[in-house]
Figure 1: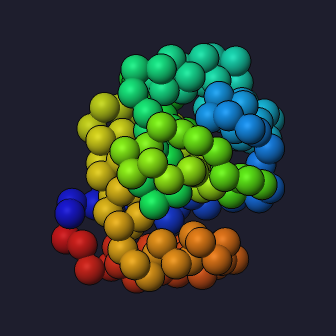
Figure 2: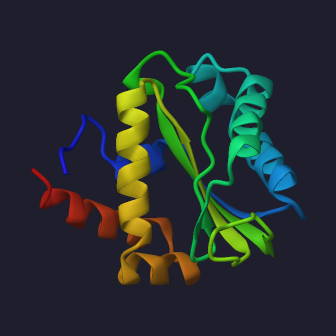
Figure 3: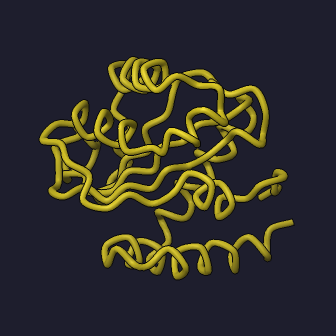
Length: 163
């Protein structure tokens, strides 16, 4: 894979990890995650939280972002931020699994919300996040709700080998 300026580890570091996110439906879980984002992150992105929530929910209505294995990758249909410095991925662990209409029928308990500055970066992030989620060791870290340093360490080690 070709690495764009910031890798997935940096995007998650910027976006943060959120534990015990509430919600009994996919819409509620997305809303609670967006509400949990730090105001500074939203302000830095020049992105009103209401606009982000609306865009992600509209995309979710088109087709579920549940990729299987208890993971969903919600994202706006179109890039919302202006520069790469404003991009982020927010990793959320839900307090209980939610029906997300995933292809494998499994309930979702882990979200990776992707917010990008360009269609190219959004597709790259979606591809890379999906790749990681398909790796047994990374999936195990998500299931165990591993500390951020362990998750980022795994990602950074894999990204070193990408040229």
